[in-house]
Image 1 (cartoon, helix red, strand yellow):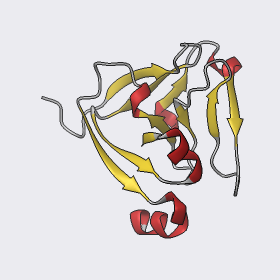
Image 2 (image 1 turned 135 degrees about the vertical axis):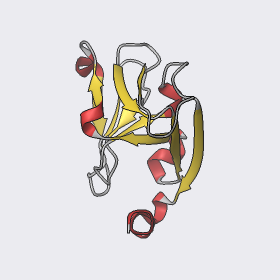
Image 3 (image 1 turned 45 degrees about the horizontal axis):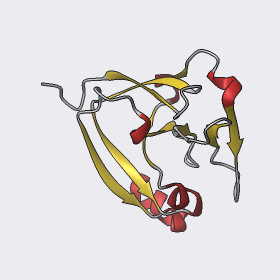
Image 4 (image 1 turned 30 degrees about the vertical axis):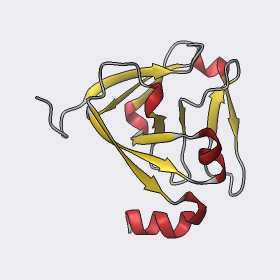
Length: 130
């Protein structure tokens, strides 16, 4: 049985499969549901992997576009064809936020969903990472 310290390679991407990636993490993850204006509209729930454990595959970069707002720190990437945000760079810039529902079946054994108060980002981030 896998422990939280074991890692697996997850594959995933967007709906039309033009954006594909691989990410390495534990098979059990904590995913964050955020209530910021962007995440709440998209109902994005994600877990973060270090930058060095995330890789875009094939010609995926050709199908990605990016949206920013507010501080422009978060890079909300999505597929130009189907519009799905399968990953993005969060404002904390501590890694890549992978939308857990965009992970191909078979490698995530458990997802615990927690709430992040993105409306009050500074206070929430400080209390989570203080």
